[in-house]
Length: 626
Image (tube, rainbow, N blue to C red):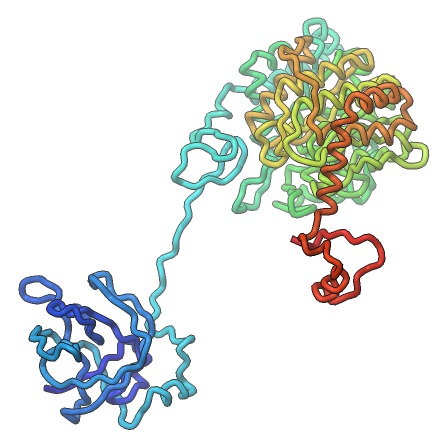
């Protein structure tokens, strides 16, 4: 019987010599004596059962010989009922036709039929060691028998409500719970009717029609459908959260509630002029935004996009806010809501960032000053600090800026708005930052801050008009803010602010990226502007972290606003136990204890060996341990 050798790797077949094998040796179990035989592949017998193929044979030129084999652990094909890896080099001699190599059971008469296929002869006088020493062979780089694996495609869909990605096998968004077939934007024919209302105001005689309509409704709405053309052109792996659907969702909800069109009226839209913008932004910034109208797509920052319609949309948003402020201040309307985009409170004197191109609130404030306002209050409840607005009015004592935002000691975007940022020069004390140091802040903390900080300071300031940078990304379910303010909370805050400046209140849309949250929250705010009282009374007991932040703010601002002193003394005595507990918790977090052996006398010795430097003479903080 002619003998053959086993060599399953194509590259190994080319370089291996006779009578030697250099690939994995498969193991099989004899069906008769259960002894493990090696170098066999399954073959089908006549009756369909799986037999064992013939054992290693000797070289083609001789009837006797030896075979040296080195094996690695290898799994057999799925047809193999049982296999075990071989971890040693064995010498195998083919002594008979019997395929079983059981040395202890030579009498095993199980005959294993079949032949090895695609085997090649090896060169003479070639050893396994020589094979590994050959320069052209590298087992790690042997990819001759590699077959490409079919790409594993992960299918996903993006939630219409919050833009978060979800796997294809789920029917509801795992972030906000929205149904995959979301019909949020199909609530009503909002956009066309809104535009018709605006055109009606223009055709009726401009500002004179405002006086007529204000007798029916004292709330003005600023909207223009051209702002929907501002969108991200470049297709990315994730939809941009600041998208036209935000305005569509709010307009649809207002239309479904019969508020607008209906109880509110629209002011005519106009683009802000270059001269008006120059009071807020630098010429270079204005021209940079304007230049985007000549480009299909562009970016100011990685997250602040623009297309050829963005400059027009930004000018429309700023123009609507300026005209609403003037209309409210002149008595043409009691209050107003600016349904505008792109947002504005991150846009500074000379830069666009954070989805913002022009600072709408700042433009409105300066327009109000030109219309006769002496003092303007800007309250910013967007979850992100309005760094642009604070920068613009940092040294201006005629504009008081109060911001409630998530801060986390500067780790939350944009990182500004610390409690000790109070303004500069003449504007010192006219920037009030209430920075939350954690997520999940809800109605209780916001209402508590309004009662003890925002409203008292605003009463002492006595503004002529109040402007709200109303971002709804602190709302429950927002994918960016991750806080817990409800529509009832926003309604309550709006109701409290409406008691200031004789009710002259302008609410300007900023952020907010959960369509259901932003639409329900905006609708709740507009209902309050129409005179509806908040239905739900909110408990004002703050969280421990929220209370700590509010006390820190009061302690810093009390020198500028003495009206805070009675409340501060009362809160200190009332919440002394809680505040001391908070201080202890913060201290423990900042200075965690080391391991128990750190208290041993060998502290300096252990420190030197652990860190490779002498033990410092000052008190050591063990932040690096654990």
